[in-house]
Length: 62
View 1 (cartoon, one colour):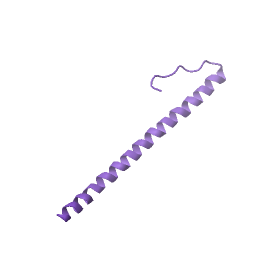
View 2: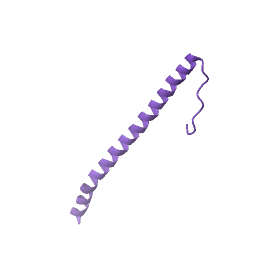
View 3: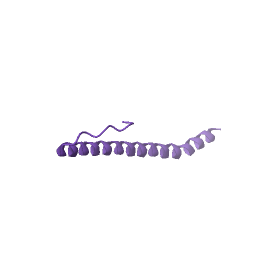
View 4: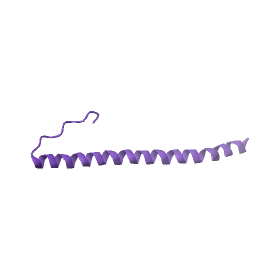
């Protein structure tokens, strides 16, 4: 019976590691996208101000 639990443990390790990597990569992509959108909005606001245009209307979901 002891070998069953050891085999089960070693069988689950690759799944847990792949899940951890997937979560880490997905979280990184979401953070990168958020930061890129923030930087783009800042540049756009600076360009609109430079041209004397009103601020961009707010986008739903922010």
